[in-house]
Amino acid sequence: MIRILIFVTIFLVSCSEDMTQSAIKGCTTTTACNYNPEANINDGSCIERQGCNDWCEGDETTLLELDCANECGGEAVEDNCGECLDGIGADAISEDDSIPSYNCVIACDGLYYNDDTAPSVDSCNVCGGDNSTCLDCAGIANGSSIYDNCGICVQPSESCTPDCSGSWGGLKVIDNCGICDGDNSLCTDCEGTINGSASEDNCGTCDMDPTNDCVPDCAGVWGGEATVDICGICEGEVINADNCACPDGSPLDCAGVCGGAAEEDACGICNGDDSTCTDCAGTINGSALEDNCGTCDEDSTNDCIPDCAGEWGGTAETDNCGICDTDPTNDCIQDCNDVWGGTSVNDECGICDGNNYNALGYYCTDLNALQDIIDDNNIISVNDELDLGTQVWTNGRLISLEMEFESLTTIPETIGNLSEITSLNINQNNVTQLPESISSLVNLISLKIGYNSLTVLPDGLWDLSMLVTLQMNNNQLTEIPQTINGLVSIEEINLSGNQLSTLPASLGDLSAVTTINASSNIITGVPNELWTISSLTSLDLSSNNLSTLSEDVCNIYPDPLSALDVGTNCILENTPSCMSSYDWSSQDAENCNE
Image (cartoon, rainbow, N blue to C red; front, side):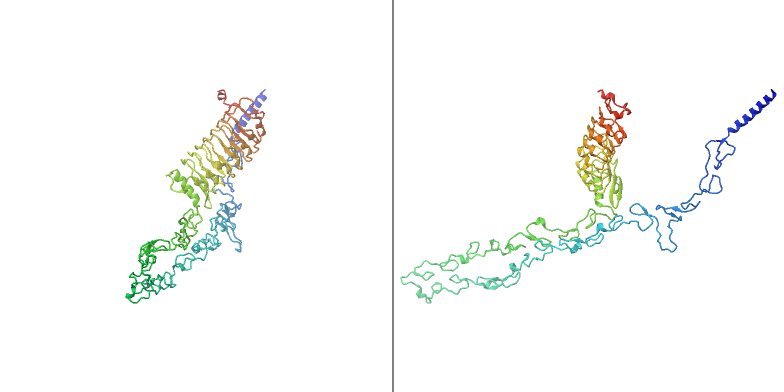
């Protein structure tokens, strides 16, 4: 009995000591900084040694790490090109210096290089380019040589010009009379002097003295020698006045006929009709003359002259390019190099013969489109085109533009000039209409036009074959046209929050689409073509007015259509067999009963 008591006592004491020992908690990991050799229960408080030198807080040494050369505490670092360097930023070179060294630098394409393969921006502002995109006809990058209208590559100031007939490079010239291709004959006087004043009288005598011009004789012959005799008879032979009377006492007329009726006219011509001294105005001995245009007056200063085409009194004129015609609307003008009839023009930057890039390398057509957005929406908080929204530019061209919460109400037609843009975001504005020019954004990949006031979309939108993402949610759209199938690359479509009552059957033609969100509309039925889209993985039809769902949904649900939401509708019976495990409890039974 005593032995038993002693044994029990010893056992209890021993158990008591074991229980006390098992209650010691702490870090039991021998390699830890805070290892407790007395602890037999690991309480998770172990602090592992750090670095390549097993450093613990409180050590006299400092924490060291392996560098890229696997040296503990080394200074070698890996640059952006993946090269392990000596820590001062230069790549190693060969001992004989035969291989050049390159610093790892970022090139114009946004990638890092440490060799001579890094692309650079050429003279045309193209990354990795060969200057070919801005060569002039002489093969000079950004040169100013052009092909003139004669097909010759020259400087603008050396361009060929049209001759007076309008033929570019022609040889016809205006003569001294102002006549195109003339021979000076129209203004050469009878002495052969161009623009001379000599004239030929009625006797064929040429001189500049009108006072010696010949006159008609009594017989009406210009320069003739016939004279009137003493009896007043032209070419009469009577020399004695006593013989002037007729035997019967009657007088001789001017023709020498006794008792004749012939009389001298006002011009002194016997039996004349006054015509030899009557001017063009019908005035006897008058001074009026008829010019080459048939105008009769006494003022020689207003006599008509030939026009540049040689037509007397014509209206043809020679413009500043030497072209003679009667159409003033086609008169040549000066180009931006002040060359009359030249072909040089100002680019969108206002630079003559420029390439549409400004001095900072930005494409001015893109900048002008941004300025139109600012002006049309009266955004007074933006002072510069580059401050509008969030922009991404590549090689001087705008490729991404985000304008959320900019209080936009209109988008100008010039948005279509952003021909290189791939991403456009105008979410959260009050835009009521998009311009048709949006169809010109042929490189557009992402278009976000949600949370606006759009009621209809331009027809050209559905021709954007590169578009991958289209968000048009939370507008006032009532219809999506069948032409949506023109978006052959589309993967994501968000139609939620509109006023759509149906979906177009042509959605079934979109072979690349993976996600369609048509929630929060008033859709009453879904076209069966929707259940033929083998690429569709996510479809949201929640919060609509659906009362039934076709068994055809089982063609794609649950594979590949793994995410299908038809919650908050009126689908209370005749549910598809493949959706037996679907939670139908969210159907809006209250509205369905109305």
